[in-house]
Amino acid sequence: MKTNKDLTEFASKRYGQNFLKNHSYIQKIIQAMPNDNLPIVEIGPGLGDLTKELVRARNVTAFEVDKRLCEHLNLEFEESINSGKLKLKCGDAIEHWEQKGLLDEPYHLVANLPYYIATNLILKALHDPNCQSILTMVQKEVALKFSAQPKERDFSALSVLADSVGDAKLCFEVEPEAFVPPPKVTSAVLSIRKHKFLDDKTFEEFLKAAFTQPRKKLSKNLSMRYSKDTIAEAFTALDLQDNIRPHEATTNTYHQLYIALKQKDIINERKSRKQLSGK
Image (cartoon, rainbow, N blue to C red; front, side):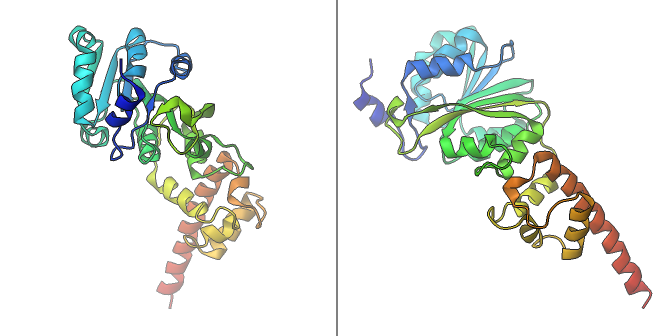
């Protein structure tokens, strides 16, 4: 049996590893999984504590970037690997995702993500049409940014993106002492049940502009991307107050505003071209 000292030595700062060792939280993650028979993709299985519970319930494909841990997992899960319950992929999950996707069939993503890549991986999952849901341990602040509701302080572009494709919620918090070694932040399990997937990069760029300075006026942020006339016309058409802040608009409002600004932009551009050609 590995001691805390052994686990600490296993953890790599390079990969931002913190191993969840509190079994009650592992069980809570299992209980929060969707109730169906779809396969599971696990990113960063670490020492395999969560993996042990996952393979009891589903077929699992696990991606582990750390070669030392891959050696450990190959020994620890030899029986599950031989039976086909577990497929262990040793390598970078992001590279695999970009080259061929994580899985070529519908799946659920369950992971204890390294915090430095958590946001990027969640966004990739939101874009992946095969990913049906995301259940992941992340830094609490990241979970809040994805799950916050309009008018809440943490409501962000990430909140809008998550709400655009499904239902996001912070399931529960996890204190640092539940990990070895303990992180310096509070963690939380984030759940996103998807109904569709992200497929409009321009909308994401629009949101990035809208939340450039979250405490400034939304119209001020958008003026970096659109003309003042275009913004004013779109706000009037949607009956939006000029002093509305980014966190005060709903997801539906952002979609309507995006469409309105795009249409107004096209109309105003055509007007400008006609005026120039008439000179």
